[in-house]
Length: 426
Image (cartoon, rainbow, N blue to C red; front, side):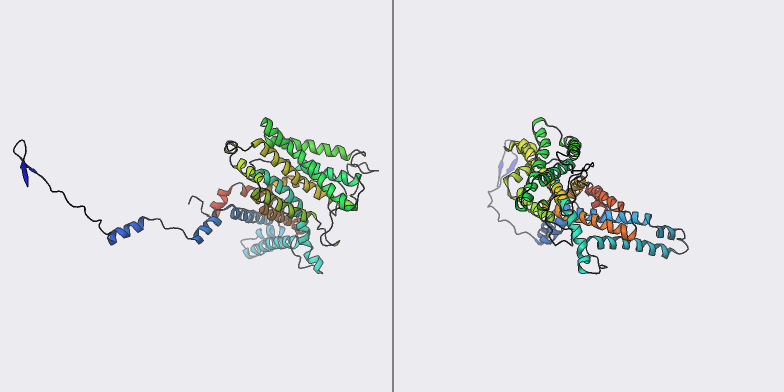
């Protein structure tokens, strides 16, 4: 119907209509909706993505890359390979043969010196390499655990050398100055060594908490202070110098203060490795099952947020350095009280304080990762000597491989780009 408006124009009016029922989606609508929906990833896909974008795979690939470039250095230093290159275009097969012999011979000898020597005449000789690897791995693991714990708290403990020296010297002092039964003497020497190293390691933590001093500068300086303190003690007969000796060296450790052998006198493996394994479980418990570990991780992630949440950041810094110093000091104790030791010297750290930084990085500051990294570096050290003796390859090649591992660990995007690994954002 229509009505007339003010100007006599018809105006259309509509009757109220009933609400319409919703229409069923057509097949075309369903297809378009399904195309726009992002499919949910399967568990297998998620697991593979976590593996390929995780830190563990990057660490493994960093080792492989370092060994690859180490192989190139082996080729450059091998005389037969250089000789084959001199007439490469006449007989290229000779060069490839010499290259294969050089690389395979090097890594086979590395295996025989670090894991299992199939050329050994007896079973004892065949398995001795793995025991040497574990012996070298013990101090690396202990020091690596200490460095890794500070990493988790957002700190950088580069004072491993000084902490090892002070811990080893304190253990040696208890060992040579006291005459006690082994059941008391050995635990006391270990405890004193760890305690002195913890107090020494706690200095940068206290300074950072109270004054904001940078822990890297402080720990580097304390390395020199610790070295000269130990050197002074080793040149004073009233402290550590061996009677009748003019060298900066202590007397041999008495039997009551020596870490016992684990597999008998035919092997050099002693209870220091067992101590490293126990320390690994202890650090894992601290970081993952204790409130102290939670505070370490919170401070390491964001100190400002941790402080806002009521965590005393200064106490966390100090506690982290105290525990770290004790662990690194145990590495020094291991060096001094090991069953093959002939006394404490100013070089008892043997570069382990710095190698431990690499071990902690390779292990991604995870206790069991550090244990595995310590065993790997122990294998490099044990096998490197055998490789040099049997193949004439400089042991410095192993040091280059270790340095390259650090280089690749410091650049995960580079490793992922080389192997075309996806990123977590992909």
